[in-house]
Image 1 (cartoon, rainbow, N blue to C red):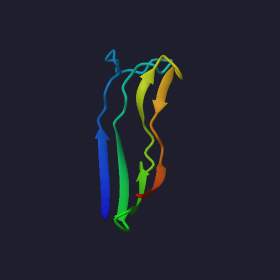
Image 2: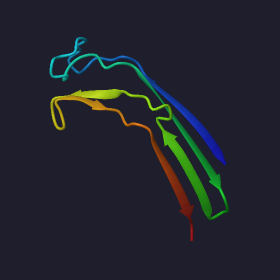
Image 3: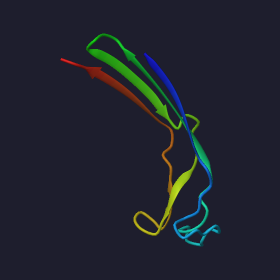
Image 4: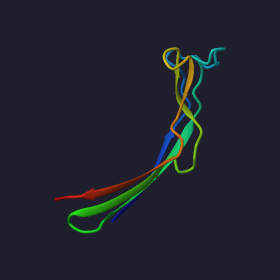
Length: 92
């Protein structure tokens, strides 16, 4: 059995051109700091069967990681919201 909690923090950083002020089309400017917490749990049922479960972005943080002038832009690309997964492994 495993139980994992992962915290990932990224501090403020600027775009590729080192712009701090946001541009009107949102393609440039500072990207604010964000913190994401992920949790996962796995259990080995038998030698051939296992279950896993997890929640990514457990706290539902709203953040963005990139500014772009390309597809699907222009603008900011939002970070992934809260998501869950369930896995089953069976070996033959």
